[in-house]
Amino acid sequence: MFFFEQRPSRVAREKPRFDAIEALAFDHYGTLFDKHAISELIEAEFPGRGQEVAESWYVTTKEYCWLNGMMERHQTWDDLTKRALAYVCKVRGIELAPDLHDRLIQADLMLPPFPEVPAALERLAAKFDLFVLSMGSPWMIEASQKNAGVSQWFKKIISVEPYKVYKPSAKAYDIGTREIGLPKERIGFVSSNSFDVMGSANYGFPTFWMNRTGGPLDTLGPTPNLVVGDLAELAEVLGV
Image (cartoon, rainbow, N blue to C red; front, top):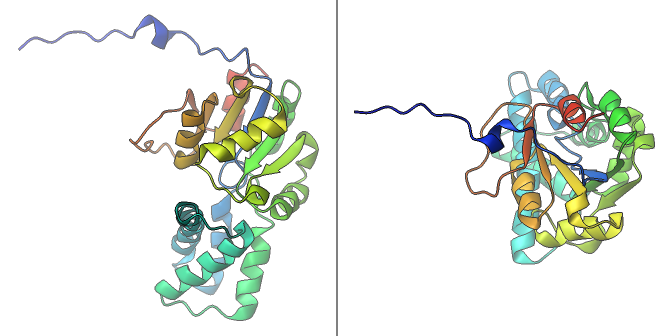
């Protein structure tokens, strides 16, 4: 049996260059804002269930978007958020009192940003025009940004909700390109969601996967141009 030393290719050794990028478009939930932070409130009411319910709630909300997309029907993100919460609690045998339901929905509007996000956004905004490109309801994203004190770093919130489409359809990313007003090759897309990374890479954005958990990417493809651990690392890679 022969063994060959694997040497990194010249391309692999070179630092990726993204000189053409003029703007960055961010997914909102899970990328900039910690969707799982709401687990603390759930845990206080249902000990031992907080993380489980919070994670399933977010996953189910996204699944409802995809199902609606395939059925060619539309419901708003805020409506799907409420429906997903009711379903997740029901399937787990959790009795959700109306007042707790309302508190969870309200808490969802006040999710904290990940710790490095505010400072990293300030750094990135010094070099790039920053946008949000999300399936979220615009008023919910606005509330999140204002509550976290980061709204000043963004040129615009772009929600695909008024167009009644969902990610990862190419139509959703095309809306971002049109509203930003640049060719897609000049817009870097940033997301922590694997489906979003594949969708944006498939569309043709230079795509950055924020892999905070260190987990594997879905094997369906396409793949991102760069993987970073958090937003501070992205700012460093992009030279700010």
